[in-house]
Image (cartoon, rainbow over all chains, first blue to last red; front, side, top):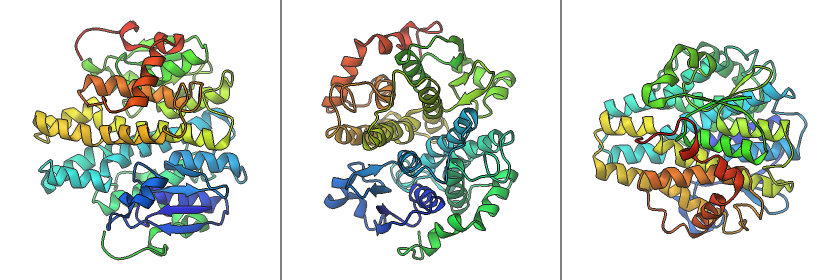
Length: 214
Length: 214
């Protein structure tokens, strides 16, 4: 398999964690978002939306959208699972993942922040209010959601798709100055994940395309 | 089962379609977003994020996030399926659903538009640019994604989770004045869905809490 991605992209980071949790090897094809490689003709042929990540399977199919890619990996490579067996626990894991992927990350996406600053005229204070209201609000909701479900990880004591989304979200939130100090359980899980080999392997800083700057 | 929702909420609409496609009966508990019922103590106890929909199962579990709820329904009530059997087709259906749920709908959400207008100072022109850039851009990407997969519906000739997301997205986009005239295949599928009994049953206008206004 070949993963097209960018070291600091939250969505790429999610898929790297899922691949590592399942012990799957893959080639990594960096797409430099700062240089606009995601809108090159070659990349748009793979993903018409010009977003990372995209996963090329061994059969040559190109899959997009991190949630869809993680579900594909779960079905194609069931062991070890990244979704709980119990239907309600499984729905809870997916709900945390979806809250982070649909209600938190989109609002701190680089292209969205750029639009707000340039076309929207947002100053630093307006951007801070935006980030704390939307990504911050969704993260506060997740802290409450996992109050009933968390053990060592978001849902019980085994990493799931929820944790694959939580770690990149915490990483991005801290990078953009969102106040995460009140998210006690999420901070604990984030710290625990740093010591887990699969999460460690997926860290942005050690990817081949990692660099300084944003 | 009991569905907590709002007639015009895109995410509630998705779940109504999925329930109808599977022929499932349910009680409907309207949550009046205009009157702020989603932030009432009673509702927050069900969904700490204060968003609709939430689905209460017959065992009393409360599930949130439309994508997670649709996946739960698919596993709990497999026939008829709303995901294709073929793994790549299934990933494509989920990728369309995720593109609409993560990259389109969040940016036209009512609370987000309200923030941009009040705190963000967006005038009508800035709002139009925002809506056409983000929800509009994601929808244009979906039009390209389904160029390779669509038959009568987004993925082949049977409705899937992708169509459960497409119809509410088209409905919302037209409501907010996003230009969808160039989305030929999506318009065709939207029109076809209007004549499908399950999609017809899920229409906002015929829900018990439907009213004039926004």
